[in-house]
Image 1 (tube, helix red, strand yellow):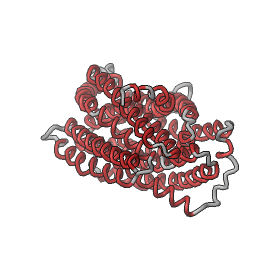
Image 2 (cartoon, helix red, strand yellow; image 1 turned 90 degrees about the vertical axis):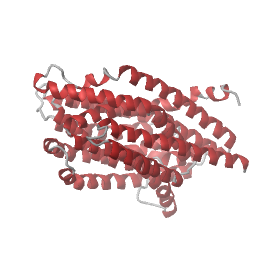
Image 3 (cartoon, helix red, strand yellow; image 1 turned 60 degrees about the vertical axis):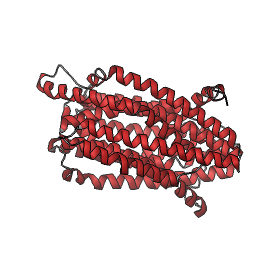
Image 4 (cartoon, rainbow, N blue to C red; image 1 turned 180 degrees about the horizontal axis):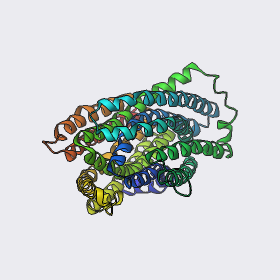
Length: 456
């Protein structure tokens, strides 16, 4: 097969992936702006947002991971032109996401006191507690939004979730500015203002996406007249069997990055703030790979519905190639600007915190070198995982992600991340080891399955 057999797919891959990337980058950009605004208040405040969000990331990973079960089912039904199966998949997925959103909110709310037992800096915990109260509530509209988003993605209508996300981001940034700093007569809430902004914007996001999908001919009959509590046990079971392993896959990955936040907290507030900066920057490039992962899930799901397995493999490889080329580009950017990017987050005119800010920038600069190295493995593992979800293969990939992140990655982070070893940089070497293991093992799994489908 020639190189052009893969590159000719780039244009359509991009058309599908770009709206997803922009929507996800929008989420991350808001976090980026949040961190810059909160960073102006001090390193303790920045570390508090990091600690509070570490609980949120775990809950979000379960909810978002679970919701991905909807996309391949909708994509397969769409390719087969089976409206009844498609609507049933969406309705049951939406119901389960609503239930899960409420359960995750309760989980985070009642898990808050754990912060007191995690040996985190006391001033950071005190700031994080009230912030987490409000942000936890926002999990409910966020997971409901994910159900609608994954449905839209499955119909290849990826631009509408992007529009809803971009609107929510604008609302969030405006509210953050008004409520963190108390501008234009609004009360000055500090980091609690960021939590209010997040909650309100997520409510608007889900309402606007429903409005958009209800107004489009292709999707309106799916999202209106939903008999939400008339449920079929077989379809519930099917979505749970697909969604639960997908949730665990995302949980295992997000949890190791969350562990990095906690391990950084053991080193002090400055290493924790530096970790937050590097994590925020690297998560922006990850969202580009996530966009390609969704495109991979949609296109593989479509080809599975059509039973065109040779085409399925060729299209998937075009996405793997595209992701690798983009990852190389981001790696070069991180290497070239690792000393400059962290400076965006702190205020060097703040003489009171100058020593802290200088240390944070120095630490974050070194972490960006590790982030540059793992761009490629991070991109490959998430795009291949999307392709496997498109094949509705979720159980073995769940085992692979657990082994990669928790039997390989975490022990490396734990041993090398101690103060008398490599500190923060050692923690990120563990992340690199976990992501690289996942990329290799998931690719082997995909290669095996697709060859088997073709030969059969």
